Image (cartoon, rainbow, N blue to C red):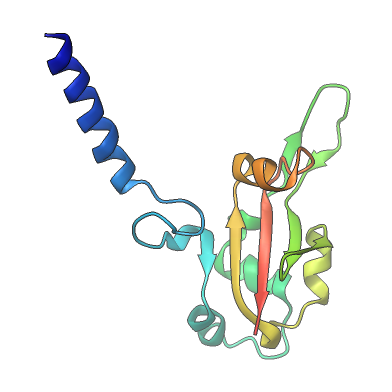
Length: 131
């Protein structure tokens, strides 16, 4: 009986893992909710626009400012921006990036960003990949 329960539990875990998708789509199909592709950027028809306006148009949830991280620090929490793997700044820094340079924009949620980059990423991270 214990063996049957263990096998059923293992089967459920394996089946669940096969359908999980991370922000970068590494497991299974690519989750478009966390990614703005080059094709979407081209189709946006925003020549000369900046990354902030592009994200606001295509994935406004990336720019969402969350509430304070704690009762003692009432500063709103926002995503950090990375340009080709290097920390670039806060959301305002997106206004300095011309969309003609951008190949892809990826959003990493707070738990993944905190694991990858540290505890000051409670708002997640926006990764900009240039051409």
